[in-house]
Amino acid sequence: MNKITLAHGAGGKETAELLEDIIFSRVKNELKKVKGGLGIDHPDDSALIPIGNGKFLVVSTDSYTVSPIFFPGGDIGKLAVCGSINDVLVMGGLPIAMLDTIVVEEGFPIETLKRIIDSIVEVLTAENVALIGGDFKVVPNGQIDKIFISTTGIGISEKPIVDLNIQPGNRIIVSGCLGEHGATIMALQHGLSVDVLKSDVKPLTGLFKPLMEHFPNAVKAAGDPTRGGLSMLLNNWARLSGNLIYIDESKVPLREPVRKYSEMLGVDPLHLASEGVAVLAVDEDVAEEVLEFIKSLGFHDAAIIGDVRRDEKFQGLVVSLSEIGGLRILEPPTGEIVPRIC
Image (cartoon, rainbow, N blue to C red; front, side, top):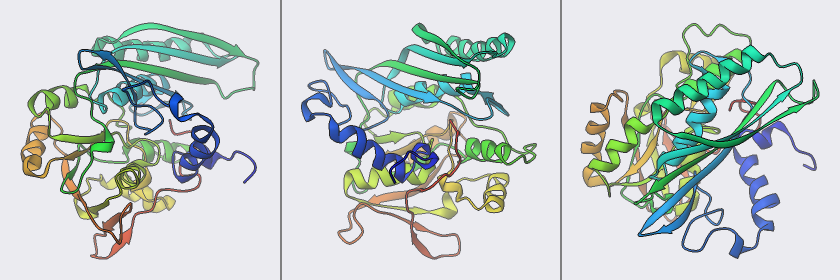
């Protein structure tokens, strides 16, 4: 391809290849991170900058272009704030501050903007995260689709969770039902009724803060399966670690409406985005205990869905046991899965 397509922004294989070929390969190795930290040398949900005394500044930035901008369960404002908060949390950071950039087209209704800002402020207030700066721009009518938002989350971590630490024997835990956000946006974009669907967008502080306090060393890797869903996240882990990741699809929590809409529209639900779910790689000897603790926090649909294995033949791959007993390689998603999803 010699032009950007929607697939390049879908969070799947094309996105990963574009980032590596167009951006990462053009940055000198010594500029890919701050000394002693983590950056695009090993891309993760956030960057880590050492600030002394064994602590790290956790920084994550993201842009949001969801269509439609209001959906069951939230809107672009709530999505943007929760997304950056969660990216800090899955790195083992406690979010403390945020910056935002808002770009709207000329003629955008003031009342609509107020609704979106109210959503942003509501989440920040509940999470006790300060809004410390940002920017606001207006472009001529028709040059963007309504509104785009970028957010930068900032946190502090004393014990970062880095995906590089995933290792054979780890068990894979998901904190809740998958694909809720992706199925909702997908159905809306196809003009379908969404009476039985609702985005799961929410901050995961209520999961990570107590989990890190009670099990400070058990979680080896963590991520939120947004664009590209569970399949992209697990493929990134497998490729990064050189291990085989095995999952049992019968153990993956999926609500029936998500399953049915996915089948109707021809999309693998494991490719669909979640905006309020965490995926964890946890030490095998405490995995069951961690799972019960997560459920006690109110994440009742949490489940152990697989594990990490050393396998020379299938290293770097994700293998899935289907519900009818067959094995398949779970490929990273390709193509325009659900455009403009977050």
